[in-house]
Every structure is written in C-alpha cells, then in structure tokens.
Image (cartoon, rainbow, N blue to C red; front, side, top):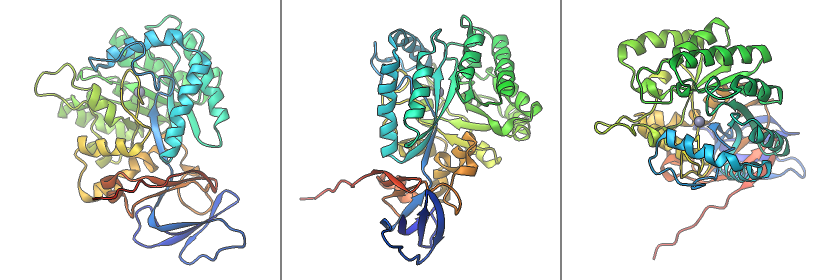
Length: 410
Ligand SMILES: [Zn+2]
C-alpha cells in the first residue's frame, strides 16, 4: 500500500508512506508506485499512528438507563446502579454491547484499547466474555483487559481469590480501587496485594487510584512506593488520581519526587472526571481532574481515556478520542498553540507508553503498518473542526473508511 502526500505527526514536510507485508517499509517524498499497489491519496492531510483509548469499561458500555439513569451524577450512584445491572449479565449481552462500542471506536481511528473488567462477580462472566471478544476481534483491535475489582478487593466477599482467578484466566493487567475499600487500611492492603499479584504473574498494573475529591485519599503514594521498590514503575499506571486536584501544594511537591523516581504512568479521564467530580461541592466547585499540566511538565507520562461510553457513569460517549482531547485541553488549561498541536500525544504516543506497546507502535520503518488519516492538515485544525478519520489502516489493510458530510448553504 502507498499513501501519497501526507503530513506525518504534524510535520511541515509532505511525504509518501509505503507499507509492505503489513509493515512500514519507506517514509519519504516521491516513492514510486509498484505494479498492482493500492494507492491512497493523502490529499496533504495529517497521518498519525492510530488512536488509543487507554482507559474504558467495555463490560458496562451501552447500559445507560438500565435499570435507571444516574440522576445524581456521582461515582457512587454509578457503582450502585451498575451492581443492579450486573445481576442480569450474560456473556452474549456483554459481547454484543462491547462489540458495538469497539466498532464505533474503529470508525473513529482507535486500534488499541485498555478495558477494565469488573471481577467482583463470583462467576467472572464479563471477564470471560471480553476474553472471547479479544480473540474474535484481534484483526481489528488490540484489547488489553484489566482485572478490576469494582466493589473492592478486601471489601468484597472472596475479593482476593476472584482477582487471582481472573489473572489465571488470562486477563493482562491487575487493577484496584483502594479509595472505595471500607477503610484506608484496607485501601493500603489492597495496593500491597495487587502489586504482589502482578509481580508474581508478571502482569501490568492499572489502578483506579484516589478517584474522589478527598484530599486525604493518598493511596497514590503507596502505589508509587510499591512501584519504585519493586522497580516496576513503567509497567504500573495510576488512573484518575483526581484527589491530587485537591491535595495541598506542599504535599504535592513532596509527592512529585517519588512519582518521578517511580516512573509511574498516569491516565486522566477528562470527560468523566469533570462530570463526576465536584459533585459534593456547592461553590467554588472543583474540576475533579488530576494535575495533568504539572505531571506533563515534570516529564511524567500521562495519557487520556474516555472511561465510559453510555453507562451509569457517563450517559454520553461515542468512542471518539477527539471528544476526550477537547475536554482534556480545556479542563487542564493546556490551550497554548503548541500545547494544542501536541495534544494528540495523550491519545497516541503517551498512551502507547501506558499500555507498554511502544516497540510495536508509531509511524516508523520496521514497525507494524498501522495509521490513521485525518481530514485536516494538522492537529490544531483537527480539534477545531472535530474532523473525520478518513482511513483507519491496520497492517496495511483498510479497517474503516469515512466519507465526510457535506453542507450546502442557501
Ligand atoms: Zn474507570
């Protein structure tokens, strides 16, 4: 396949990109077309590596309103409503909804997804369903699955055994939810437990960590200490960390030293954080988002996720990472021109680091021929016009193609 005349990664120069046997084989101006080669006219548009959603819950997707809508908009009502819906889960139900959302994502240029899967279920129905789907859809998307204890590890019957069982059944990543455990002590113990479990089975870690507007929620320092002492930092991710938005600056200054030493990754979920955050405030209302700008400036890796697509925690959502980046740059005060131009990193290269797939990701000769063509010349204009992904290409094969809508003014 030959993609003609594109701006790769916002670069000013126009180049051609050639893919042979599923891999990038040449990236330069003026590549000659080979006999019978598929040619895509890049129209001087932006070519990026595929989008990555580094944090989503596919088991709960498309359940908004079942059995009721979350009218308070709190995390806790979301958990209560989901635990009701969970009672009627079947494998077919999970697979049908998750597949529908994944197909939306593929249409919007996503090829890598890290999905948390609720394992506080004695039958692990959702985990088994998504493991099957991961296999079924491997030609469209790389699915990384997190054993996520939605109702706690120490605070749920047989929580530890369920976590270990889920890991043994093949989930890729060990999760946690220390701020939701009954007590701070249980929270700490859950972090020690999940880190030991990941170490034992050689798994990645991604913890829902301090997703609460409580400045006393400080499990992040425990997770970072574990990551540092076990030298697992680049394999460990702290998701949400919204309490950091409420920490005082003196404590945060001290904390950042440890965060940098540990090499931990962070995921913020701007849409859902700003929606669920600040719900117990009158005025002033907090934004409920972690310190993305400061983490990024300190050289700490941060990526963005959509978190929820039409479920008890987010009634909206369309599997489009441009929505996520737009909210992200607004709510974190990252709207300088170069910040906007570079903001695609939160859903591409930074997310690849979070998912630990950097060696197989990016538009470089020798890497898998995965890329997306956006209907604008650079990412600033991509955000401005919220443009379509014209082509989503995986291993040199077109996964999805979009014809832009056309408006006629009278
Ligand atoms: Zn989440």
